[in-house]
Structure formats: structure tokens, C-alpha cells
Image (cartoon, rainbow, N blue to C red; front, side):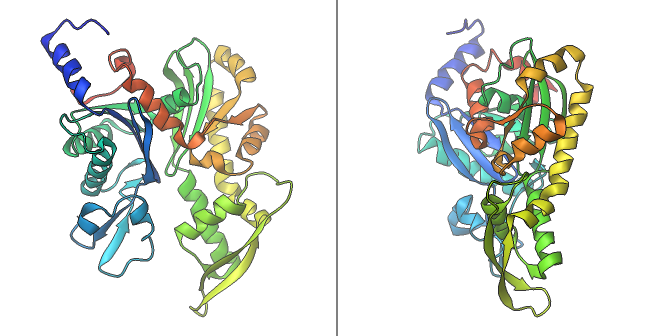
Length: 357
């Protein structure tokens, strides 16, 4: 145990013995919660179902996450399913607070004697005002102390990269609202960017393709299923096809059509190309010595977008260097926040909290 010199240090240590401290990957598409000593306990969509015009969460506050996502695009006029984060930042503060309160309470599992300390990952490009908004929402949701960590650093730690060493690592975290790209060394970003092209834009490209090429209107959930089932960023050994159901754009009646992975790959080529080009631009700004490290290390890809078939091949071709999918890419950021929970004092230099200005 670290030396505790001040009375407040002793108090924080004592409170920590009874609180369920947690790391939260607060994503545009999904929220994951990692509890200290237990690992990931929550992995649910960042969606809340409310009564329209009131922000009253349905089912006594229980229509959050997976239950709410099932309602997307299917709610009656007096209800609506809301995604309170857009492009990695809070778009609806009140709903975000209610969502966090639900997830924090659920992660505590009934143990709520002491409010928890929370580490939350945020996009690297957000402003100080946006950072404080996240902290205040978490505090109002029941957190005792809130620390923020940049997503690329959490992702790299979760992926097992040697970020604390004097060597370069390239992490690409393709989430729902943003793609976080960073070259890291000595636990800091040497050069980084936050690109607002990610999973949502991939889904939108599929929606637009079906409307233009097949006169078929589909929702975001259907587009996501298409992306996961037959979507790809590079040629497949065996091309795939599937039946898609939606509403005819001309007649307005329900119908289905057959689509294949070749046309979906073409539809995804623009947002995939934007991600690849953003990685190239980050690499062009890296110091020569770190660039030399990356020749052997290559790029590590995590996040939900890492599950797109062939994304590593597409990035490798575009950059002319190796690229690999990180282990369990969906949970990398959340697992990274869990590492910080183990010793908040040790990592205080790379964490942001509200008392820092």
C-alpha cells in the first residue's frame, strides 16, 4: 500500500475499501463497465427509452441499454428511444446522467454503502468544457470521485501495448461515434487525432446504399446487422449474401431484397478510406525515431469497428505496414480503465479530474 501522509489520503483509502470502484467506457454505441477485482460486468447499448417530451425513463427507469435498443425505430408516438451521446460526446446531459445512474447502480449489485470512484474514457479531441460535462454527469449519477482518461491510452493499455516504455505504439480505436488514432510513447500521445467517422457512418453508408440502389428504406439496426453479417473492408475468400427486409421507397409497402458483400464493401469504401487516410496523416506527423519503432510494431486495431471483416487488411494495404486486430477488441478500452483503478495515485499524471481546472 502506498504511503498515506495526509488525513484525506487515509479517508480516501478507507472509503475505497468499501466502495465498488469502476471504469466506464462511455461510448456512443455501447457502454461497458469494469469493476475493480471483478472485470467487465456490463456491456450494453448506450440507449435510453423515454416518454416523449418529459425525459421520463420508461418502466420505472429500467428501459436502458439492451431493453431500450430493442425499441429503436419501433416506439409508438408517445415514446422515443434516445442515444444521448453523439460523436463520442454528450448530446443530452439529463438522459446521459440517468443512463449513468442506471449503469452505476447495476454495477454495484446492491453494494452502495459508499459512492464509487469512477474512471471514464473520453475521446482525445474533446474540449475542457466537454470533459467537465462528463465529470458533472457522473457525479450527479452517484460517483464519489471522477477521473477521465483519453480513449487511445486506455485502449492501448487494454490491448496490452507497452505504452509506458520509450518506444512507439500505434493504436486505432474504431468506436461508434469516433475513431481514435494515436501514436503513444511513455504513457502519452505523441501525436493523435479524433475522427468523427466510425461505426455510425458505416451504418449510414449502408442505409444510403440500400435507398439509392434498391429503393429500400431500412433502419440503423438493420444496417448494423448487414455490416456485421456481410460487411467487409477487403475481399473475402468467399463472398456472402443475405436477404434484407424494409419498406419500398416508391410504393411505401414492406418488401425484401437480396444483397451481397461485394456491393456492401463498395458502399463502405468511402468511410473506410477516410479512416485509413486519417491514420496516414497521424503517422506523417510522428517523429522519425518513433516511426522506426512502428515499422516492426505496426498498428493495433480495437473497438467495435475492428470486427468489420478485413479492416486490418485494408489499413495494412493503405499504409504499407502491418496491422493487427487486438485481443477482444470490443472490451479493450474498458479493460484499460480497469488498470487505472488499481492505482489512481500512480496514474494521476495521465488522468483528468475536475479539480485540475
